[in-house]
Length: 182
Image 1 (cartoon, rainbow, N blue to C red):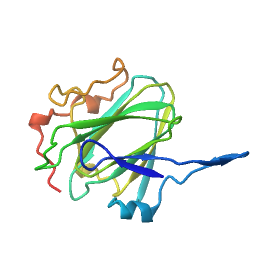
Image 2 (image 1 turned 120 degrees about the vertical axis):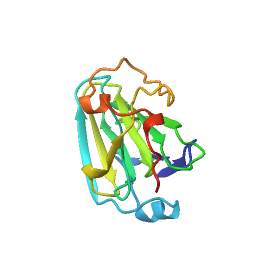
Image 3 (image 1 turned 90 degrees about the vertical axis):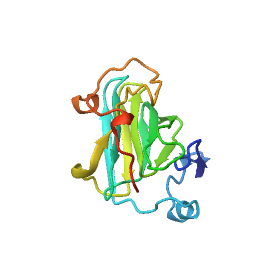
Image 4 (image 1 turned 60 degrees about the horizontal axis):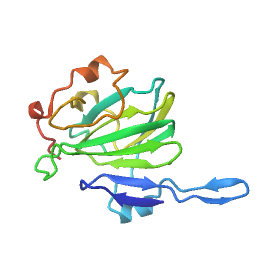
């Protein structure tokens, strides 16, 4: 497993290093010791799956505020997505900036998203399935969202926007959010 920091401090790309033989391959996707050595969270009390039937679907941008702020690892296990994380950390020099990566069942990469980031994605294929690992249980009282169309964040979604929940259409823009104090 290879952990690579990205342009904004905090998020990391997690890539598998498969070992193969005539049967196929095997790869470690998580190791508490390696995560601890890299200074990453190692406790994952909740895992979730999501499914999206239609190419162009957008989910997000979602986050949890303290005391339920969470770290996430997201992996696309079927299909492909354009994955985005936006820095909302109070006092961060990269506040309001975002990173994006393509995650797919083919490239087998995952994204480590620290607490204080909004997360969302757009499906690049039909029939996308996502696996999420969370460092804290979901708390509806602490959830928040950022408008996925905020011009100041300037996410360049690669496809025409298709399926979007009513909730995600009503999230505030960055200028109307309080930074996340961790």
